[in-house]
Image (cartoon, rainbow, N blue to C red; front, side):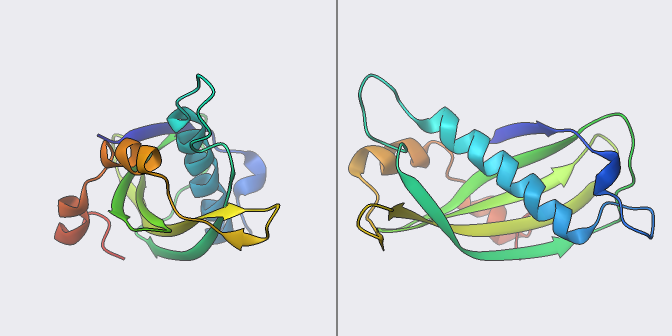
Length: 144
C-alpha cells in the first residue's frame, strides 16, 4: 500500500530559474512524511507514532523541472525498509503527466525527553509493514 499526499505549489517555491527550487522539494517530502506519520497513529490510547522522529539521511534524484501551476502535485510515499530502530521511506513526486523527483529518507524514532533514538515497537513495525514495498525500490522506481 502507498500513501498519497496532495501537495500544493506556492508561488514562493520557485527560484530565479522559474522552477521549483531543489531545496523546496525537501519540504514537500517532509509535508508528505508528517501527513503519513499522523495517519499511522492508531489512536485509542496507543503510544505508537506519537513520539518524535529525526531524519538520519535523505537521497534525492531530481528527474525534471517542476514549474508553478494551480494544480497540486502528488507525493507518493511507501516504506522500503524496517529495522530495529529506523525505517526507510521512498517517494515519488509526480502528476498525471510526469515524474519530477525520486527520493528516500531514513527516519529514526527519537525520544526527545531522553535525547536519544529509540527502537520501533512491535505495533509500529506491524503498521509499517502494510506500506512495505521494497520490490519497487529495488526495481528503480525509487532507487536513489
